[in-house]
Amino acid sequence: MDSIKDTRDLLDKWQHSIFNYLPKIVLAIIILVVFYFIAKFFRNAGLKFYTKIFKKQQHDIAKVISTGIYFFFLLSGVFLALEVLGLEGVLSKLLAGAGIVGIVAGFAFKDIASNAFAGFLLNMQRPFKDGDWVELNGTFGTIKDISWITTSVKTIAGQEVFVPNQIIYNSSFTNYSTFGKRRVILKTGVSYGDDLALVKKVSLEEASKITGLLKKEGIDFYFTDIGDSTYNFELRFWIKFTHQTDYLNAKNDIIMRIKSRFEQEDISIAYAVTTLDFAVKGGVNLFDQPIQIQQSK
Image 1: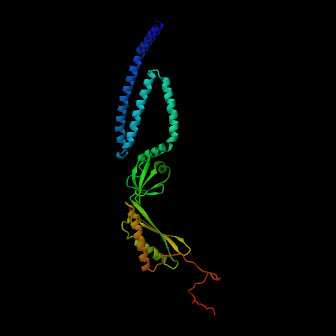
Image 2: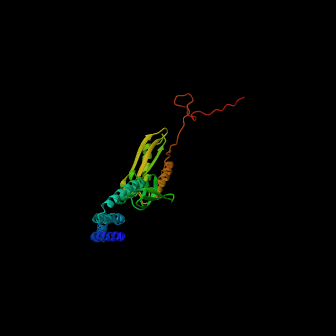
């Protein structure tokens, strides 16, 4: 009889607790449903708003921001529902556990997070786009794809190289396609016996005949140094640049033209000269005197 009475008392307590707790459960469910629709509304509104702000190629950024807004409101509803149910202790444990997991995940995914954030900044700033000729971390080629973690580059050799976005954003890089032009710089030298004024005149004339030359940018010629056996100079000019072959063809063309014209004008492209000093100050030119060969008896 006592066991039956205890069972009845327990059932009565459960029934009483359920009837007292039922309104809280209903209210918690209502809160979750309301916050779900609120989160959905703000996600769609944020997606439309940020899509108008960002360019079409940055549509992924708008999706990331709108998704973040969605989860913010959704989690707010979950936390509020737990408080209504009187589960603050569970909420505290969840937050503490999330903090510990967050610390562990932070160490584990530190590089991934850094690359993702750098990818976000690259997509925001857009310092280069698909097809641009760039040099990233020593890799030269065209941009193939800019993702959140890495940027892929198609090299001259036809290989695809993946460069981490963190490395790109933390170091300097070069975009050769930004201005649609590129400067060709030829460095060489002529011998001591050549007419320097003629060298400059001939070099400027040949540079003016280069295909794709941007004449408005001007052609620069400077003697830069007196070497051991040369007068060194630099010849600089700008060309239209859309592909690496534009630069290579211009460099190839100016080298061939300079060599051919220098030969016509009897100008010598200097090479290293070695002087032999036979105990005579200033050395002796072997061609000043006839060479004598003595044969031993």
